[in-house]
Image (cartoon, rainbow, N blue to C red; front, side, top):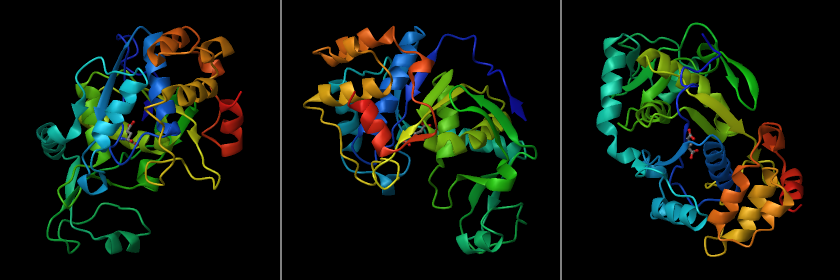
Length: 306
Ligand code: GLU
């Protein structure tokens, strides 16, 4: 299964930023927000915000409002009303029913132990296998490797059947899996290009598999390097990476613009953030972006403090 020329390439550009409300925005997520905004504006495109609040147990009270307020303080406003995934269950249910009707999704009662006993990934199980009362729903993994050209990380070949097996699209606790919801909503919002961190590169083949199974077009993908902390872990809302300060946005904005290779004249702006972002649009170019799948703490700090 090769996706070389995303079907959406000739359409007007529509990008998005899709945070999960599991904590406050930190420098790594701000980098993705700013880069996706600059990329959209440099293509005269729309930039949308979607709150991926489909996993209440992982959600932090107030995080959605905090993220949106922080984005606003940085001059980043969605061009259309913010989409909340918590209100999208009916659309996910319709997609699941289509996949079931097409014979692409099947119920699975296997426990974590059952799957571990198969070497950690799920092959086709028989309908009477497993012991869980409520099934999860899985998508049959594509039989051929998924091949796609990431705009920044280059050609990717991912064998979903070998690495993930048939993967969960609806959990046995009734919650929707990210891999299904993200595909349904990227299509619903007409997204032509996904700009996000390379921690999600490995999810992309599964998302392409869901798109194919639903007969949906595949957007282009651009995975940016993720920022690592001093211990080599991705800065994340969960490991309590320092939140960016919405009350004093310029220092963090300057750091992010520096990591994205913006010239000193743009970084020297004195605000407001929206004016600095507008000044940066014309300078946004792939060959200014840092290379690689991740940036160790010393590397990005050196870039950020130029
Ligand atoms: N909600 C995901 C996250 O915050 C990002 C999803 C995406 O960009 O596809 O990690």
